[in-house]
Image (cartoon, rainbow, N blue to C red):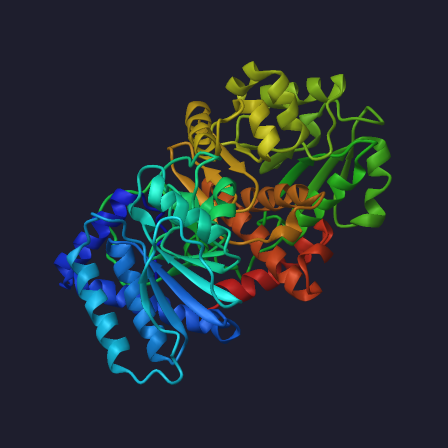
Length: 517
């Protein structure tokens, strides 16, 4: 099973060297393993029989060597495979590439090709228009992770021709032309893959929005690489992570021992936010949740969620203040869902920051108010959890040049203020105050719907109230929120059918399915 670490290219190289030294295994055999497992994954997950031709485009290095192994295995399965060599005049090839080219040529020459009569090896000639039988499956094995500069001349024209060919493209390890450790200029050429099968580890570029149009859906293939030593600043939130963090249910638990959370949420214009967050808190296992809202919201709560305890604000339309003496025994506080940014709400948030010394959960309008009063960031209790979406984070930390720059800003912001920041989106990023960033592996596009963030806030309140440390609550909350969204989507059949109120109903099922033995 691949590790939860997200590696740089240098760390991947270190991992390969460590594997070859410790296993031990020579480079040519490790290449054989990688290509074999790629082919196996392809045959299991891609309907290859729907394609009239499979074209493997191989560069002169070890990524091309992987491609030749893949081609050989597919050819042996009686599939119509062609190899197109992307080797400009004067290019140097690696010994592993040369060995696998000889093996490919020997196999295709020796075989009777009555069912494989299209098999051939051809060198791409500059300026040539790529034309194949359609539909075509193209496997990009030109550069993989080995590229560190923009494509030019021969390879630029080849990649442009590939992208215009109409083929369904699957990249080997990485789309050729896409950088992995940093930003690929928007105008830079790369293979535009529908899928990428990467080896052993996610790389940061596999997890960011800007590179999705280049690498498409990413699958990770286990090829038995060792984990290099050291701590990894970028990691994944996986099922195994959550299993380690979750408390066992306690037989003699009661509502008093399961935590009491205070949710400050809702306004006359957005009463549903309070209902969604409170429902999520209760479904998340909290013992008691008190909802502090304006009277116009409190009037709606008993019918929508009778289990909640009500606390009416003195202001009938907006949150304004809390009388803390009326709320003894509160274990955690969340504020912001549907709060609005009125003068009363702004003053109310400042009073919460002045009064509460334990970690807070801040979402939505609480973040917007902070963005308008940035000096208040210094009043945040240590390890508070902020849950911005992209635009809310921009208001807090400034506009980023690109997605890689944004991850840098995210890390710096969390470290500077000693807090945890959950940047919501596909592969939600959780930045810890020590500089680590965790990327989520659950969730789906159906969760991009109004109220989904309110549900996450309520779930985080439940976890923090039950005694989870803020870092653990953030990781569990993000993962469980996404996993429940996946279960809900499976139930309703399509992501577009999902609404936010569906998500809490599937917390239990997500835990059952995802963490059972």
